[in-house]
Length: 334
Length: 78
Image (cartoon, each protein chain N blue to C red):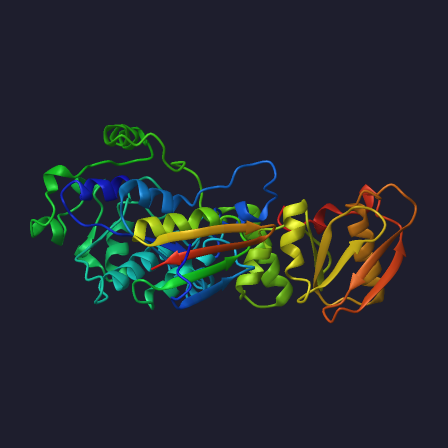
């Protein structure tokens, strides 16, 4: 937001690019969770574009992004976050978009600040991003430009270097002061994570998925479902995805034709999907676990309806799991 | 309200969560001439905020928004 505004203030036409990777925290998760108690969340990228008065291109890169997640050339951060490869990819995609005939832009700018992020925003990584994205010296970082060699837009005089900044480090006070100067009273949480891959629990769930399937791959639905519900793997060959509240149950309903699903018949309770193949004893085990999360958890017996992907249902009577029967190691992600 | 004599295109984004309805709308509008009326069907309530916001920054007009239970309809003019 700040970087765009700094350049806009020099009379330069700026448009925004926002990428959908499938791992975005905002948007999906806010939409899925029960919304009864909270007002709708704004899309921050669109909100920023409106504040700046610029167009915003939202690009779905979820398919191409797989290669970044599965084979990061520069490795992962603390979890499964391939931050440096991600940044290289996004700058490259922005460049490609900007060079298209109908847009015809001259350079790419980002809000990066040297030292702000341990993995991707370091002095050593700045030239790597510029080079490997293909942007080279058409990549301008207005907020820390004075700490870097002049780029093409600066050398050509398209941008006045004197009016750029030399911010560095994790301290965001200078940015906040600049925001104040511009009259921005509201902005996205500065240190808020926006990618599930930086989350330890989520990364563990993704590793579990790869381990259970015997291959490092995923589909968009897989990574969406990792954001939702309790994931419990009582046996290596199947796991349960159990809705934690009404919004999640509603979201899981959309997957009933892809997964065997269970719901307690005679007590209020969650919807649960089975990811994997189950046989008779597995089905009973799954039903007992799901019953544990229903309002009938304390009764001796209750009924659970198990429905296959073809829509064939069977009702089975089970005893809900007692708390001590649910092994902590079955909880995926923790 | 939209002019009933104009050709109306439809984007069916039901079952998709934001930002995908916005992306589907954006990709469709890219192919359409100015003045076209576009109906967007969605189920994610975020669409009611995000699609009008996207239209505002790109200069398209929202003619109508309607929500009936989980079904959302937006009518846009490109």
